[in-house]
Figure (cartoon, rainbow, N blue to C red):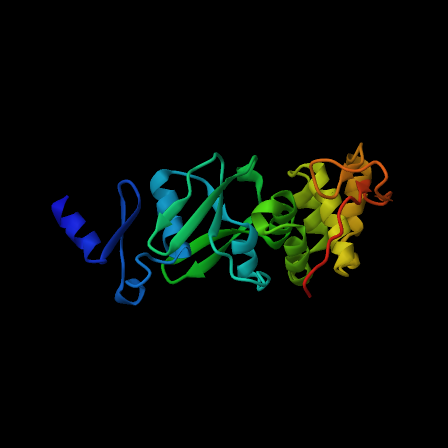
Length: 226
């Protein structure tokens, strides 16, 4: 243990989680950590957790993050405390049905990492809009992410998410001029949505305009930074 402590003090080793150590190459010594995408896969394997990189961190892999996120966002089955290791910041977000969320692998210099597909990312962004910087930021990311979305896959991905997510996503995609992606999603919403839901939770003014198309109460003005 003394040897490990000495190496950590020298910046040659870091421990983002108890019992898990990583060697820090010279090029990352100033950060005091490997970049999160290089150690998260090994850490999740060490902890025996199903995970995927999501939200703005996932959007980066599809060229749609717009602004570099301040933290690396990782979905897991249950809540976990965030990680702070040197300059690295990792936020964990609990996601129901995590085993059913579609993911794909991306190569990193340390191996591969699981990332939510564009369609799953779009739904998560709407579902966890506060973690993504608010609805305006979500709309901005969707305007760029739309180029990578498949309409049929989007409707399929919606089936394992709360129905209001699909309602809000369909409306936002129309607002950022990706109407061509919404056909199958709207068909799903018309079948699955029983009630009107507010665009921005938790509630809505009864006088707010409504979208019959999406069974949505438009209680917020959303503007994408395009």
